[in-house]
Image (cartoon, rainbow, N blue to C red):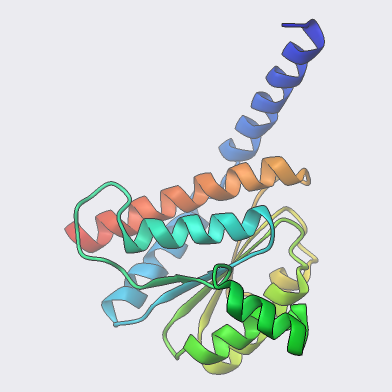
Length: 192
């Protein structure tokens, strides 16, 4: 392996580790507790995001529906990023900015939770979904980068900031935080 490749690998690992090591433990605990309360009250959790965040939304919903570590009952979770017929019909007939908002309108009920993943914190379709969710009494959680002035930071009931401005590092910390939240939820629901 070339020295240049080795430097890139070491730098990427170092930067990823730094972003993950700065995850806010208190915010993660609060998010997990809110999800536990939602489930205990019969609610559901919806996830949305674009690109890499879309795949993370799908991933985290699967962890809650199927299992993370423990064999247990399924928890109600939806990824709003996965139904291609809804996504293409809504974006074709109306706008791409409304693809998640429309699904929140269909599925969101008071006491549910919407988790919006966005590296920039300004994804218009996630922002619009959060705005409608708040009107419907859906609790909103933003998992974003470090931009404290972004639209999601101004809207969400709770925000988990990732202390990085580099998209790959933010996404790596997003999935780590998401896994920790799923672990806490699962343990809290089955043992707490």
